[in-house]
Image (tube, rainbow, N blue to C red; front, side):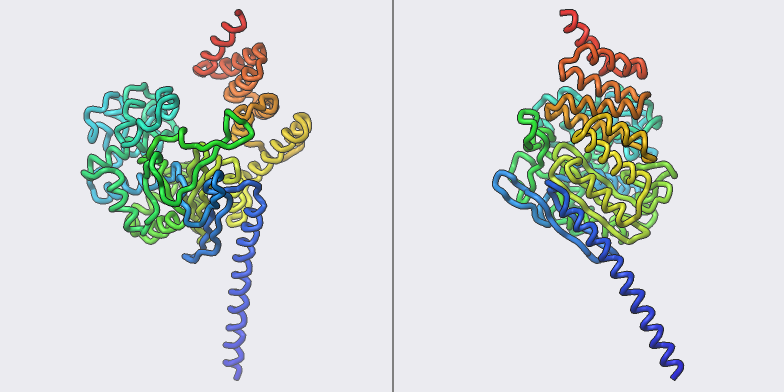
Length: 479
């Protein structure tokens, strides 16, 4: 009788513990669901799983605003740089098969690559980790002003970067450049003997059951795909379609299309060692060092602990991410079809805070949002007061991004206020002075623009943008 009573007590204890665990689990999902519902203008789809079970899947906003077609959970979204995850897996597969090595140079596979330094010194490891020092092709005037349908296949981009000077010595600094992954795509084609997209189809998509992912042609109809929307420069308070800001087809650097279900399948296949063996999965999903936020094609929000990994993607009208919380057994996929600051970042950080707990980085993000809102809706001095009195740090990149959003929308005085806050908070930042100089220039305040560009140049004599702007402004001031 005593034994039966003891067993009954154990059943009750474990039952209560399980019920408490489930209550906590679903409480988090309820918090996240309520928050996402409250985000004004949020447009996309979100999936959350735990222990291989999907707990939450919901779509928001419109895939096509003109026709009032709503996003669905099976809608295809532009994945942006999430495509780098697939390129990295492909490279690691070839390394695992001993067809290439991390230490191999560009010249081992592209012997006619024009830049000798790049050809002889940049390794596959440099390309994967964005430490190659190669130039940024998205910044080339030829790309910005040229027709995007010129860039459909891997080799079409070569003229944008092959003959440009190196930005830094290989292995010297981290500098996120799409160029690195374009070259990795070319290496995949040389080594495998397949076109890049065919390799992904045969070695990643089919294995992970990703039936709605691919580098589609943007100038052709794409079944069940969301349009991307960014702020219009022509009509500053309206949205415009982002199609003319992107290469006409995605590739090894990103820009393809996918769904929340397909990225969930990719995440599961990776963790189940279907794409890479245990050794290379560990290499892929572990920070290189305690301060390495980027590894071999993977991002790590908390590299000190190394418990979160994934990859994000962002561009005009694109904000998305897939992420795994190893210790919490959660996987999260967020795909949106507006600029990242139109809901994606809020969703990402709130979900992280709810699942993994608060951190200084998250506190600073939400504090910065409060400061920006105060500056725009109240006044500059009240925003400064918030900064003075707070224990939290303001995020320079978020402040700067919002300032440029105001410039883009034609609200130059609001941009000046935001960049004034940036200078106030980061008085040694050459970028802050460069940005406020641009805001003053757009507002027609030439003298103040010159003063701030000069301060930027004093802080960083290699700021070529400030040099060019000062020449133009001084010339126009003389006239």
